[in-house]
Image 1: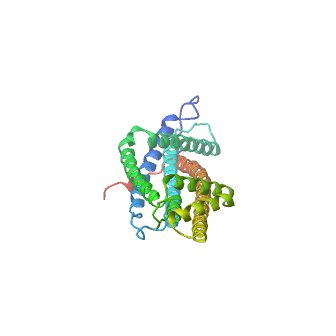
Image 2: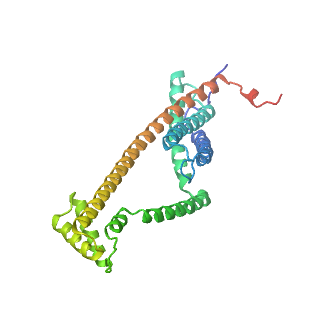
Image 3: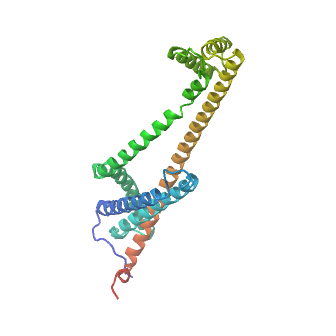
Length: 283
């Protein structure tokens, strides 16, 4: 087939109409597929223990879905730009491929900016408000649970249980809390502070000194374990953030290549005047 060529010899190498058209298409596909994937993802989680899909499975599926969205949207946007671009008449076949691919690369860049703008614009105000409401309710429930399961409060409760006639005062409880915090920062309880708490506890709670010391040691051991668990959670979150950043960069690079190849394919079909009307023609 005869190649479709432009009769203009002084036209700009970049055709922004084709670029913006491809970028808008890519952004639309990305938005729709992201919303669809989010809906599917929400069906996989449940607030009830044991009814949610494994977080590892969800993370893998979400990563593959994000890759599919990025590649398919970039390919479609690049193809549209390459198909709609008017080639320069005196350009060689290789030069046409390069220019088509370059248009696809610009489509990818503009599309990425459009997706960023869309996800932060007022167009998503209602969805964002609803999400914030759910997040607020969830964080409120989580805050309540965290208060009920506060390691320091539990430790103080276990230490300060009183069976005597003189209950432990709030000042003594606060003092014990400060000694525990200092011990956590250094890795061990200071002997003077430990003995002081034990003596006050023994007299207030009506228990023997060795029993008071055992309570303190057991409570501090639980606090130390809780501290290590928290450190492990922070480290896990840090590693996940690093992995997410690298995967995001990888997905963007793959989608850039997909947009380049899609634009080259669109340009090839343009030059061949490939007829795709049979795909939508009614029988």
